[in-house]
Structures are given as C-alpha cells and as structure tokens.
Amino acid sequence: MKTALLQVEAGSPRRAAEKFFRTLLDRGVVDALIVPREVPSRRMVVPALVTSGDGLSGINPFAPVAIINAARAVSRLAFQDPGVKVGAVLRPCEIRALVEMAKLQQVTLERVLIIGTDCLGTFEPADYYHLTGAGFDTDAWLAQAAGSGRAALNGAKIRTACSICEAISPSGLPLTLHWVGCDTGRELYLSWDEGQLDLDALLDGSGVLVPQALPAARQSLVESLQKERRELGQEMCRDFASRTADINRLLDELAPCLGCHNCREVCPLCVCRECVFDSNLFEHEPSWYLHRAAIRGGLELPADTLLYHLTRMHHMGVNCVGCGQCESGCPSRIPLTLLFRTIGEKLQGLFSYVPGAGVDEPPPLATYREDELEPR
Image (cartoon, rainbow, N blue to C red):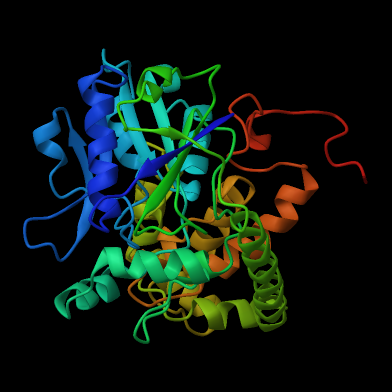
C-alpha cells in the first residue's frame, strides 16, 4: 500500500476532498462518482451521482449522517455494466453491504472503484437535520472528532449500530480517505493499492498529493476505539439476550411493531423482488382470523408479527453487515440493531462467516457442505 498526504488549505477538509475528487474526474481515473452531497438547503446530505467537476460543489464525504446505506445507490447504477468507471465513496458498513450485494448478483463490481473513508459513526437523520438547523459545521465537528475519536455532539448521540461498530477504517481497498487521528485543519491522508490503482501521476510535484506515512498516533487511537466499542457491543448484546431469553420476552421487545415492514424496505440486503409477506399467502380470509381467534381465545392484530421478524432473522442474520438502517427506519425504534447483532454473531460464528469480508467467499445460505454444522 502507498500512502500520501492530501493538503488542506484554509482549514477546510471538504474543499481538499473536493479538489482531489475533481482531479480523479479530470484525469479519467473515474468517469463518475457517487459521493455524499448536501441538498440545496444544506440541512441534509444524500448520495449524489456526479459526472463532472461542477457537480462536486457541496460534496460532504465527512458528514456524520447516512440517510440510506449508499450501497443501494451504487446497486441502482451498477446493477449491470454502466459502461463507465464509477467511483463510490463509502463507509465501512456500506462497503460490506456492497460486497454482500455483489454475491447476491445485485451489483457488478468490475466497473466500480470503491473509495473507502474513515467513519466514527453517524447521527440519526432527524437528529442531524436538527443539528444543521442549529448551525452544525462539519469542519469544526471533524476536527474535534478526528482528534478525540468522539462523534457525539450537543447531546446528540450516534446511532446504536455505530456505537458498537469496530470498523473505524476500511482496509484492503483500492483507495481509502483517512481522517481519524489526523489534524484535519491541515491534512488528510490517502492510501491505495498500487496493484489496483495507479496514482503516481498525482505525486508529480503538482501538490495534489505528497508522499507521507499515516500519523504515528493514529493507530493507537483506532485500536483504543475498537476495544472500547467491542466491549460495549458485548455488554449491550448480553443485556439484550437476557431481555429476550424466551419467546414471550422477545414478543415484548417486538410489541411496538406496526407491521409497516420499513425495516425490510431500507435493508440493503433484502433484495427479493417479491417478499413472501407481500404475497397472497398472508392475505387471509375473514374466516382465518375468526378461526385463529377461536382457537386461542383471542388474536392480536396485526397478525404474523413474530413470524415476520423470525423470517427476517432467518434470511438476514447470517449476512447482516450491521449498518443499522433497519432500526433507523423503524418508526417504533425497536432495537433491531441488537436483535440482529445478537443473532448474527451466533449464526456467523456457526458458519465461520464474516459478512462483507470478501467477494470470493459465498454466503452460507447459498452453499451446502456436509460438515458445515459440525462442532468446531
């Protein structure tokens, strides 16, 4: 891997990132970019498809918000070969989701240049919207977060999924933008795999990139955060497991479910063209309800809530990438992050499977081995 310093001028890392991405477009490294960009009001940041330098105005790859898992946006553009080279600026959980989507034949990665970026977590979109309304400044937030490793701000906490995510910085990518542990008012850093990407032309003395190693203090900060988050995740999952130790207590956790299925709609890996829960299998006749009510003495409505969540756990638990979009999309704020983290660790451990780790490792539910459930 090669590393280089990306100089920040006038204390604005956003402008430095914009300049670098403009260079990638101008020099034909990529023909288009999917990158977080502010909406005109600057109150929210959403994935945007940019095909020229003019479209880079307002980009904000550091904004601590993810209104969707951006892997879904990449999939829409690169479901088939788009005919151009597309760069996609993604957080670690979005990269993991994109890899899993490729295994499910939802995206072709041959024409996609994954550009990873450090991430300390994101706020719920509603919280971020209120923060920007109160004058939130990304550059100022970035400076304090990069040095301290703390993303929370003015009483607003990062999402549960982010607070227990150990993937501070992606690895093994063609290109990664680093800012954690850096003095972001002066510098950002890039690392790239010279076997997959040639950026030597940007090291030609033009000032775009300056060869330099990552800051020495960065690794210790990252490792400290990873340990802290790992321990927090273990504690939260133990507590959740004790709260859901039997089916009745699990039902208590699921009691606020509205039956909206929004968790399925926002999940980047729920890719079935037709969900069984939208089929006529669950379009019951009145007699069905009356029969069930007569057997049980009463029937809670909406029906099939438990079956719906158990089915999602069965389908998604083994390849859940922990992005937390399901919980963010839930209007009742059911702790779906902890539900899938608790179940996922068991299932993924059973199959020795790490979601998003590599395109070449097939998902367990798509393969069969006679010894796959043998004790290890």
